[in-house]
Amino acid sequence: MVGWLTATIFGFLVDLVAGISSDGTFSWGWVILSLISTIASIFGVGLLAKIPGLAKYLKLIIPWLDDLVRMIPGLAKLTVWFDDPGKWIWKNADRIKEILQGKWGTWAKEVLTSLAPYIKKWTPRRFFLSVENFVRNVGLASIPEGEGASGESASAHETVLQVVGNAARGVEADQVLPQRYRLEPPRGDTVTGIRDTQAGRVSRTTGRPVGAPVIRIDRPHRGAQHPHVNIKTLKPDPHYRISPGILRAAGGLARGLEAVGRVARPVAIITDTVRLSVAISEDEGIGHNTVRTAASVAGGWAGAFAGAWAGAKAGAALGGLLGSVIPVLGSAAGAAIGGLLGGLIGGIAGSFFGSWAGESAADAIMER
Amino acid sequence: MALLVLRNQPGVVFICGIEGWLQSSDEEQQWQHMVTRVVQYAFESRPVTFITVAPQPWSIGHSIPNPFQLKTNQGKFLINSVDQCSNELLAEIAESDEFHRGLLWLAAAGAADVSRLPRVIMDGNALVSDPEGDVFEPGPNVSKTEMLLLVADAHVIHWSLPGRDVDNLEAELLDMMQRFRWRLSQESRNPRRLE
Image (cartoon, rainbow over all chains, first blue to last red; front, side, top):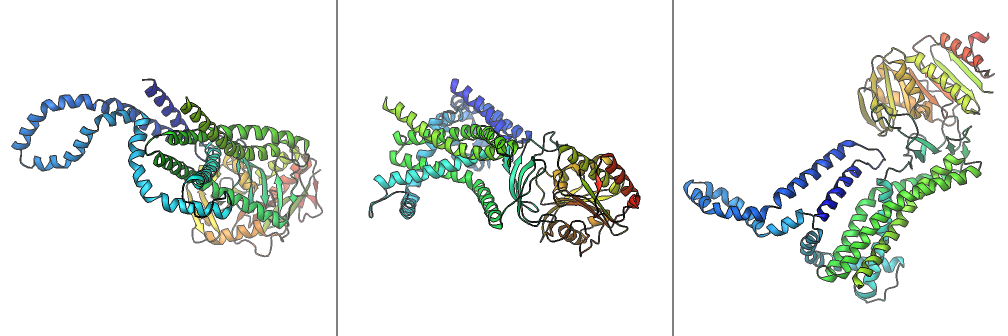
């Protein structure tokens, strides 16, 4: 009961998060859709969880149904279509009930354990070999030549996956949260910049500010013959001249961050799935490795969100403080730089810390 | 004290800008007041086409009626056509970040004709992006369409082929200038009230 209640409350909270888009805007449409699916699943649980009970009563009418099939020609053909799924539901009624009641242990056991042999069969050798080669080539770990995908090399694979996964989780958490400072997209003569999403005119459709750039890095344009940095919060806007090399580097960095942001979610999900699958494969079911890896993944996500949120706040505060003593920057621009970097760095650091904390907690519990 | 530059070539171009940088929030507000007045004077109660360069989800064009997206070899554009433009909408446009950055252009109604849009966009790009060009000159490629936009980091209003008599506007701006205690730059040409 407590588990069901917790899952329901958590489900409703997740519904609210579903309304937040990557650009920081909030739309009720997604929340409503998500709420509908949650409510449907709650009612679904109430109905479908009764399958084993209903089965008792169904058995009473089966002889009568058999007579009906004999009496109506063609009905026998129809029943064939429903025969196999019906038998499967009949056989697995208890499991379905547990899954629908949110008993995640059953879900993980059923789904992941049944997937494990296939993952083991199709992925590991090729995957381990390529990861091993990658690790060897980039020098992330020294792996003796000739050693297979086990022992030290397996732990190196795990480390690489963990590092990539943690970084991707941090970036993704920073993107999903409605952070105040965001990268300004390249438009017109602007190559990149930082946008304050809480500034600017108020939208007539959403009733919220549409945001405005605080800092802009511009290429030469009419009235400005050199690449320059605009700081809109300083009076007068200083138009700091920069070299074409810095302009190119800033544009490249912004494009790189945008690309990383676009792939962060799939990379995080893939690394988590591979890590969990490998752990299940090693345990041949659910064992110590699986619990430890699951705790690492869950802790990593929680840490990433907490870190991105706290990092952005702390970064903005620190940046604002530093900016106020640097006359060429100003506190608003300092806060923008600090907030943007703080969210990203905080997200990644939080993911690493959360992952480590999750593993440590799992180890401590398993040792008891 | 800000220096106002006025250049009026009747029937060809009307240019109004400031020399140097605005030094305070007060000056910024006063300049915004002038910009808003020019935009309202130019297109109040007239059909207008708004062209937004590289539109974003927060672009003001999305909240204006009849938006449609146009993709050309010069990029993506959001186009809106409004039959009767209200003063409130024009003020909102004039104060928007996109207009200040030269990313939102106002063109005469005929510009909405899809076959003419690429030419209009080319004219707009030439006005905004030419780093060598003098901001107070119409440039070698004079626009073939009536078009109003802000260039040079929102320091210069450029109204090509004005569709309204600009002499009255010039007089209004000179009045404002005196009220704000601004000075008229030596760069100015043909400000009638000065003569």
